[in-house]
Image (cartoon, rainbow, N blue to C red; front, side):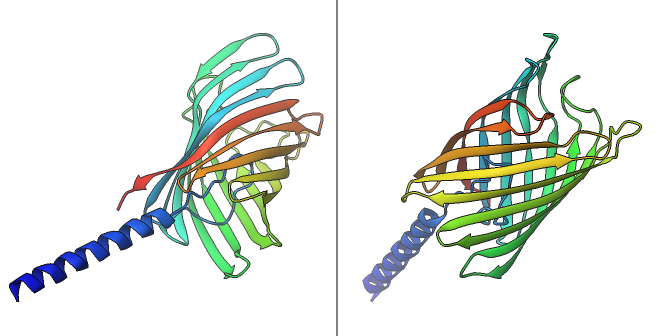
Length: 259
């Protein structure tokens, strides 16, 4: 009888371990990068995700900016989480060849998702928080900005559609300029097979007293595994005040469980 109890306990333990392993294998990374637009979905609850990469943006006046953006994501439930992002390193060369380098500003946001229809993955989302002026001199505004972003996401005939509408209250508005910056962006993602996918995006920002900026973006992604997705692409300005062209590459990865 004692031997039977030991065998049953071992079998139960093996079943639990197999279940936990299968559950971990089913967890997938939830990339937001490389687009401006975020999806309403959150990362897997209890799993820490990190997005990072490199980018180079060339201005129309001969200036350029190299940066290493990052975004850490942690969801507490399927509908609530926190985002911490910014630029780990920035190097700028102005049109007059003035140089500046260092760390960038830091953005902290809370995120809510509201699932409307599970079959089509139709959801609304809201991100709200603030940008802290942690950038080195000359690489940021030196002021705190407050941000709110509304999101609509839906799967349509094999495509994923994400639309963002956001407002930012800037801390460094000059006389004659509005302190409120408004942004609108939309992204369509299409999987090509079980690994490759392509995306296209149009985005822009506007503020009273300044010239509006807009851009188009195209990118490709490759799912190396459930826990790692690679991406690369480029964007081009379509307004006079926007940058000329930018190229980027990066990754989104699951770092592990935190609870």
